[in-house]
View: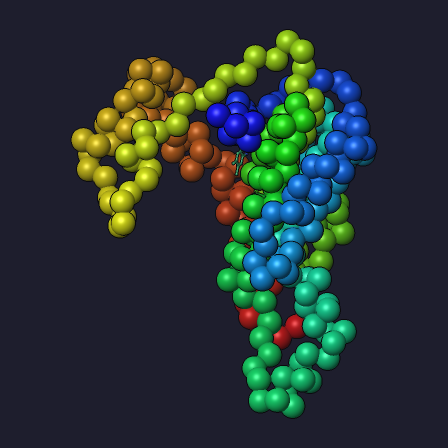
Length: 259
Ligand SMILES: Cc1cc2nc3c(=O)[nH]c(=O)nc-3n(C[C@H](O)[C@H](O)[C@H](O)COP(=O)(O)O)c2cc1C
């Protein structure tokens, strides 16, 4: 096994960090690696905000579904799906007039642009994760950055065509850190040959059998199987409702209307 594969295999989400700042050299290396990620049309449809200010971290630990460990991360990186820079540039280049003069349609930002920009941002984030891991810096994604759109918009001065799609908490592994490698589902339920395959009830039973054992019959969600348990904890949870609200609010700007 080469070092890259070893790094990928030993990575875990780290939520407890050594109380040491990340060196400037390592910070630069992580950001450089993020920027080396592939990007649609080499347009870099994303921006990155570095957060080291304690007050901001504290605020994020509340606005991102009350996760206290966030404020203890020495470095936070917020990955923004960003079409604002391009539309501002198009404006500075008189692209709308150019379109009119040349019989071309000038369209505003659509959901497809947001999805493409989100691809860019997340791919860059994952490069940062692997680079960090190779430097003994652990990380944890925070999906809840998609919640509380209005709060984050104000906190980071985000214009309308910028959406915070992903966030990373970063910090060195503490000396006593134990890496618990979490299992994944069996490959046969995730990777399909040539075409998609919907799973049968029996296949689901097998796929989730390792979780059946760890879910007690009587837990606080009154769930009888992993599906009920995970729905209650994730898809149907309060944070998820807030994510739906927040993303729908942000999407209002991505309707293709002229700016
Ligand atoms: C998109 C995304 C969002 C996540 N959001 C959170 C989060 O808000 N809080 C958290 O503690 N972990 C979060 N995680 C980490 C996952 O819980 C973790 O990756 C998963 O449990 C598997 O564990 P592992 O990364 O150690 O293999 C997130 C991961 C991803 C990819």
